[in-house]
Image 1: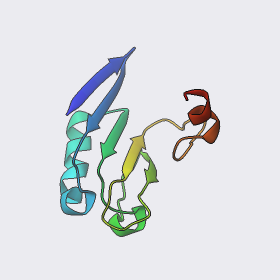
Image 2: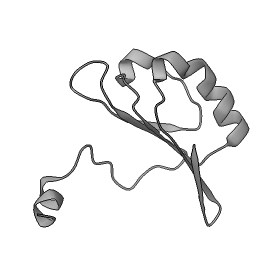
Image 3: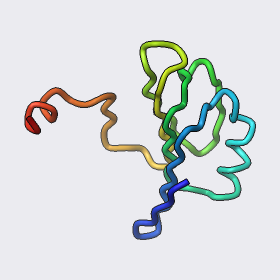
Length: 96
């Protein structure tokens, strides 16, 4: 677990968190830690496979096309200005 604090904003990041296997532990964790933003890697599930109800958090999922592979999820108390799934083609072109 990695935690960051930016001007009273708490951002927590967790790697290797298969959501289907750990979803019963997620709400108690959020209740205890109260992060403003929680980022999960390696979710290995699509949003519709997990069915999480997290009051106070907006959910943003980006899953692999192949079931059981990779995936990320972001849970945020604040509404983002913009959500971009994947890497925009313009940003990849500018780095090569």
